[in-house]
Length: 101
Ligand SMILES: [Zn+2]
Image 1 (tube, rainbow, N blue to C red):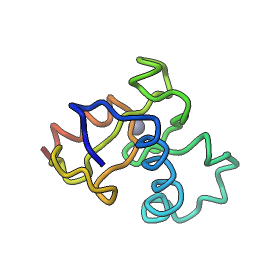
Image 2: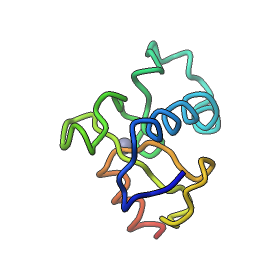
Image 3: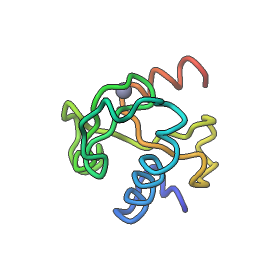
Image 4: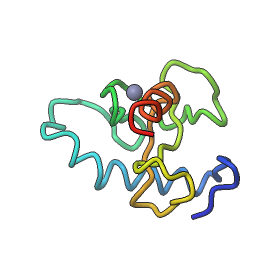
């Protein structure tokens, strides 16, 4: 998967979202059943645990309340293996970069 300077294709975004809700989300949240959400469209942010909406990807729907962007888990923006990518609110992504970057 390639990062065209932060521009992700819809296919890339689908893969990143699906990987998150199928695999990564279970590492962050023990009690997902509590959330009565349709994970194919709604998921908790890995940083703040608040709602993100899949349809509101930041690149296509900028600055909406529940927008998300692609976070590089290890803060290496050249590491575009799927294992290093996850959805995250843009503001959380910035905060995380300052904290751990
Ligand atoms: Zn967040």
